[in-house]
Image 1 (cartoon, rainbow, N blue to C red):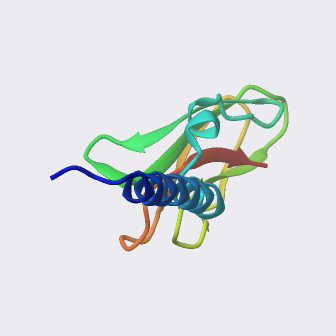
Image 2: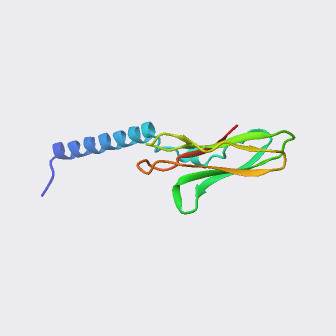
Length: 120
């Protein structure tokens, strides 16, 4: 069956509308966070930290930090959770030379972790 020019135009317009709506939804809901998810997390001064997702659970994130300073420091992990509310992990206080970990878990109804940061 041969499509008419009007039919092809409607298909093209619909495809463009769907693509535009998909892009708008991705930006507004936080799905377009590939750049921020791959950017290194900013670490508070005096701490050296490693952040990441749990090996078998994409909804659990962590910050493992060491206090390289000369005074006690408190930190916590902050997760950007897509469709679910963002969440903070437990506050951890480290004396000089100590290491510790803060973890948090995004709600299962969301899209998982979009970004992990360490908060002072």
